[in-house]
Structures are given as structure tokens and as C-alpha cells.
Length: 433
Ligand code: ADP
Image: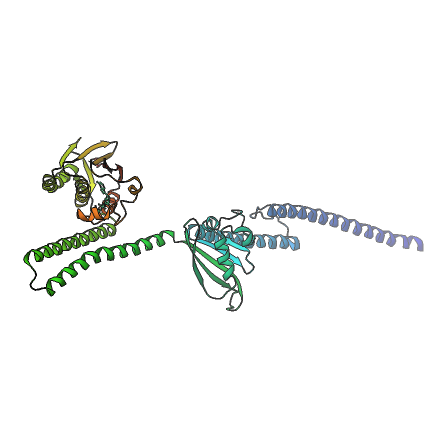
């Protein structure tokens, strides 16, 4: 009886224990399944993220700790994606800025390792591995020795340093090196910014300007010295014979004329050079030529030179400044007359090819030696100084002509043979309507 009494509660306890064990086993199994599912999707998403799919997010409806973990992960991804986008945008901005800078830019650390470089700098330093410079040392990369020496000299020094490098191929670079300081510290230099500028053209222009000033001074000084000398002689010798006095006065007049022509030509040259856009009017080429023809005909008669012209079409137009075209004709025809002996011939031809007007000025005069042909368009260049001076030349006529042709967007070239004659060929774009 007592045993029966005891059996029942023990059975209930067993049953309860079994029930409890089973329930917790089921719960643990369900939890394990959920956890496994969560871990699987977590692993899948983390794999995607490491493959670069930063927009991937964990899709879960789980609540509790797993849900919180998923939300935290998604939030972390959101922040990371925004930060990376921002960094990428900043990098893109920097690369675009560096690309559009016409100077070579190079950023190095204190040991000379390259941190940043743009395309222009790559070309200038003659990079030994284009596109893969970052992280490498300047000694491995820079093949232009002058640049390398220039940088090494100032690496880690305080303040800006700049010097001009004259390379063997006649290129001139301005190398500027500035230190990069550690943020908020004016003492710790952590690298350098190098700016390389190609100043070849600037130096060339500067030299041309210096040469021009020297030439002008020389050209002006010669007639002035002569005028001065004769004036002084006349002042000192009151009783000079009339013949002699007149001869001196004639020289003074000739030199003064030369000075005037020189100054006029210099002013004309600088006015053509300084005008970036000339007045664009529609010009009938033949009308302008006719004016010049009339102007020079008295000289040709005087010098007994036959001047002939042959215009294929008198109704051809170009666009530009008619005063300049007149000056162009005048310089070429005047030279042809000047450098042709009496009884010679000067011929002016005009014809069209495609959309161009071709003007030829031909003479059977002294001609130009082969080695001088490429130089005659330079300012003050004269094949024979004495001959040019004797015929009243300034040495600027062809330089002016070349500038005019350029301003009319045309070309000019010469064919010449010594003692046989010269042919100047000008090609100008035709005005279509
Ligand atoms: P210049 O005032 O001395 O004539 P230009 O600039 O007009 O100066 O010409 C430069 C030089 O080119 C001249 O000094 C001359 O030696 C040569 N030259 C120009 N045109 C002719 C030509 N038609 N025949 C021969 N030589 C010429």
C-alpha cells in the first residue's frame, strides 16, 4: 500500500523530468537550427562583402541577440560603404586635379619613396616603370639624371627651393621643391612636393627678346653715330666748302631716312605681334595688289625692271586685314625689285588650289644661298648686310611678312637659286562666300 502510494509520485517526477528534458532538447535543437541558419547567411554576406559587394546586407527577422547582431552588422556596413564612397570620390577628385595640371607633380616621403605622381611628371622624369611608380624609390624610377640630382639635393630641407635645369635635348625645366610637414608641426618634415614646369618656350622667347633688344640697339646706333659725327663736323667747321657740306647733309638725310624706316618697321612688327585677333574684313586680293603695283611702278621704271602679273581670277577674296595684305605684297614685290639687277624681270602670279589662294612673287635676281634660305625670315637677318643696307633694307621686311602670313592663317616658302633668282610662294585660305 505504502509502496503503491510511493510509486505514483515517482512516476510523475520521471514523467516531468522526461518532459522537461525533451522540451529543452527540442528548444535547443530549434535554437541550433536558427543559429546555424543565421551563421550561414552571415558567412554568405561576409564573403560577398569581402568580394567587394559592399551593398550586401543580412536579411533576418530574428529578434533578440541574433537580430541585434544582424542590425549592428548592417549598420556597420552602411557606415563603411559611405566612408569608402567618400574616400573614392576624394581620390577621384585628386586624380582628376593631378591629371589636369600641366606641370609635373611628384610627392615623395622623406626617404624618397613615391607617394603620388601625375602623367606629366611620368613623362618628364622618363619613368622606368610608368604607372607603377607609387611605393618605389626615386632612384629606381627617375631616368632623367638632372631631375634626380636636383631632387636629392633638396630632399628634407626647409623652405622652398627652385632651380632651372638645362637638359641635353635643349629642354628647360623649372624644378621647385617644397617640404611637407607633419600635421600641426612645423618641425617634422615628412616628405616633399616636387613641381616640374617645362619653361623651354619661355626661355626661348626671353632669349629672342634679348636678341631683339640687342639688335635694335645696334641697328639704331649705327645711323645715329653717323648722323652725330657729320653734324659735329659741320658745327666745328663753319667754313666748310659747299660741295662737302651738301655731301655731308645728304648722308645725314639718308641715315635719318634709314632710322625712320627702322622705327616704322619695328613699330609695325610689334603691332602685328601684339594683335591676337586682327580685323577680319572681306578683301578682294586683286584690288590690294593693284594698289601696290601702282606704288612700285615708278621704281621699276627707274630701275628698268619689267613687272608682269597674271591673276587667274580677279574676283578672289580672302578674309583678314587689307592693310596687312598690302604690306605683304609690298614687302615681297619691293624685295624682288631690290634684289634684281636693272633690266631684270619681276613676275606676280595668282591661282587657286582647293580652298586656297596661291600668290607667287618671282624674280630673276641675285638669288639666296641654300644655307641662308631657312634664316631669311628671322628679324634682322640679311644674306649680304652691305647690299641690304645699300638698297635701303632694314632686315625686318620678311619677319613682318611671315607674321602677316601667320595672322592670315597661311603659309610662306621660298625656292631660290644663287644668281638665278627667287620665288616666294604664299598660300592663304580663300574666303568661300
Ligand atoms: P631687307 O630689309 O634686308 O631686305 P628682308 O627681311 O626683307 O630684309 O629680307 C631679308 C634678307 O633676305 C635680305 O637682306 C636679302 O638678303 C634676302 N632676300 C629677301 N628677298 C630676296 C629676294 N627676292 N632675292 C634675294 N634675296 C632676298
